[in-house]
Image (tube, rainbow, N blue to C red):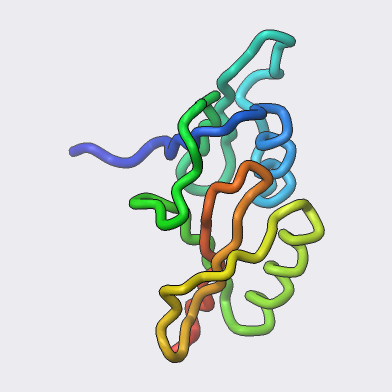
Length: 121
């Protein structure tokens, strides 16, 4: 049976993106980044996250994105604040439902991701 092992994000600056996602998720690089590396795999709890150099533009409404789970509204708010302090930015999202359980952010590369309150009804 197949399983998801790694999610790959395209980035323009592998080192900057790796620093953000390592701090955001508590993941570690599988091996140290060399001076000419344009790809890194980060491992931690859950699926691995790979960062690959890409010249394609960031999509405003990406077809694929990460959902990061928080166990309640207070944890969600704290995590959003922490991620913004690490360099993420809030995204003006035009597709929010009336009572959203998620907050849309962008990483240091502009890749969209969500912080989801899993206790939301």
